[in-house]
Amino acid sequence: MSRSRYAGLLRASGVYGVLAPVLAFTFILLAVGSYPQFSWTANALSDLGVVSGVTAGVFNSGLIICGVLCLTFAVGLCVLFVESVIGRVGVVVFALACVSLVAIGTFPESVSPTHYMVSVAFFVLLPISLLVITAGFALERQAKMALFTLAVAVVAALPWVLYYTVHYVSGVAVPEAVSGLAGGVWTVVLGYKMLRAASQPKTG
Image (cartoon, rainbow, N blue to C red; front, top):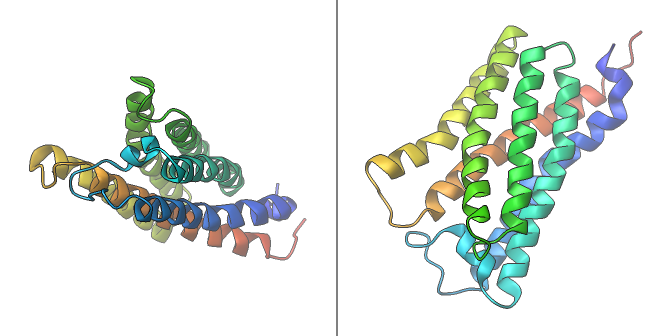
């Protein structure tokens, strides 16, 4: 079945893929700006989620909104991989990462150990999903997308590898931000790809 039959879904998913990381980092930066005591080298981003007042509300709601939008984006990814089982497996893992992101905002640090578990789940599932999706693109002979997705997976994982090997900062805000930003860049690029696919003339 032609992807053009799903033009509306691809268009909506593409928009959400572009919008989600923009909103997420806007909310995160607003939360950081509202809490002068925050340190990029000594804190975790999730520390913002338990600060009383507007900070926690802005931070947690930003993660929840981003996760929900990315779940819709994941539906569009399934259309891109309509003929790829491996690709769809990667999308399922990505969707689980999105659910974990929603859970991070829903269960802040004060909800232990749930918050820790869902945080680990997100930062582990994100690069794994990208690696599986890389295989999906490769099997569809989309070499450029495969290489791009592989590069993003490496960037998403590398800050954590370095953190646990050379411990370059005392807090985890930097690896969290770099990993999340890598994933955000990927969703923007794939969102644009969906928008282009949705604009193609209908066939069959």
